[in-house]
Image 1 (cartoon, helix red, strand yellow):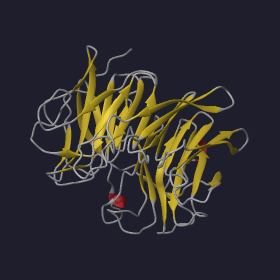
Image 2 (tube, rainbow, N blue to C red; image 1 turned 180 degrees about the vertical axis):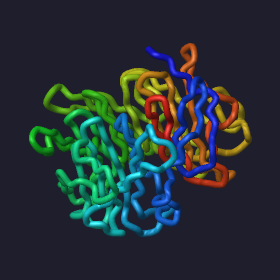
Image 3 (cartoon, rainbow, N blue to C red; image 1 turned 45 degrees about the vertical axis):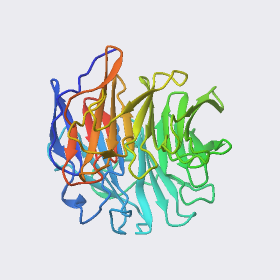
Length: 379
């Protein structure tokens, strides 16, 4: 397996950064916060992050605890360009401040899917379009196919996962996950309901090949879960139930599966819980729990004495290297953080004795994280 070192990260104080690896060091060379995406426009820039191998996508749903009620936007950038000169802005055709266009995004080298969550149960939808129709100038997002809400929840589209000709749409309000397959059009092939006692099912979804992980961070039992489903060629079936070590951890708030394993974020439901990240080499392997604390224990990057909240709000795992990134968007110092872990001689360790990336005075940094080959995106 190729080894990629993520040691020696540096940072600049921006709302959204792409950290590009140069040799063994990451340098923040892109500030994807262009003139049309200023905080005055939208306070939740980076709600969704995606990368298709060529373009970086950043969504700004336009409504939320940090933003004003404005129509959502999706921004994309050519990763080979410098600065923000090639920023392209996609809007929803039926733009409305009551909608959350761009709440979730997923893409492959062939397809893009963008959700519009909120408003009413009839306005929730997912737009899906092929790469050939991606606009080269700012304007309305393509509407090659619009997938309407098949249920009665206004949270349809809260999470998306896309792989090949399979699209997963999470609906935590309806505690369901919908599986869509493409032949000549996209259509529902299976509806998966939450296992008994589960709530928040579909808050997060991730898909790799014939394996899917669904997060249910608000299970009524107190011990939340993530559910692993496998496909036999025609049907998805529950294969494994992953459970948190501690009650009220919000285990499953974020999930990610790749060839290198499964990562589950558990940012904690308590007001001052630091949160943690669980790593599984396979869905049947024992969990390795990665914690960040202010006491200098192994696996810790923050030695400043700052109390960190919400570690695991967002997670990602590199698809070739043994590395995990976890976002912690709040702290006692008002600084959101992102933490990097690496597998070193069989042990998961922090990549540095200092915070990997910190934005001073900006709660919310670390709300979303994403590996992009040899780069890391943090919003």
